[in-house]
Amino acid sequence: MKKDLVHSLTSTFEAHAQQTDTEVEFWLARDVQHLLGYTEWRNSTLVINKAKTACEVSGHAILDRFVDFNKTIAVPKGAKEEIPDIMLTRYA
Image (cartoon, rainbow, N blue to C red; front, top):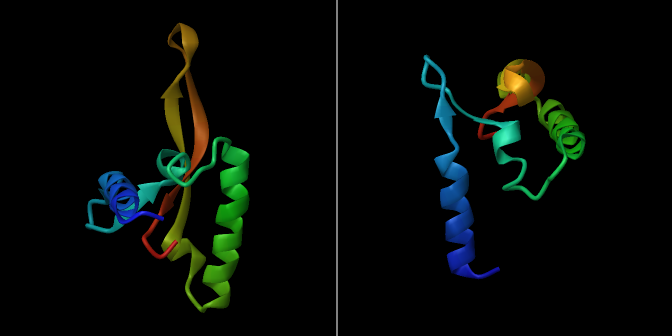
C-alpha cells in the first residue's frame, strides 16, 4: 500500500474519533464501517464479534472496549427510528 494512501486513511479514521465526558476516546461503529470496507451493518457486526472474542481471549474486559447502545436517526417523512450502534475504543 502506498505511503500517501496509508496516511490519508489514518487521518480520515482519526477524524472520526470522539470523546466521552470523561475523555475516553471512541469511534462509532456505524461511522467507521465504510472506512473499513463494510457496506452492510450485519457484516460489520460479524467482524466486531470476532474482535470481542479476541479481546476476551487476551484478558481484556469486553464491556470496557465495546459499548452497545441505540441511537435515533431520522427516516423519511420526519419519522425517527432507533438503530443499534457500538462505541469502540482504540483497542477494540
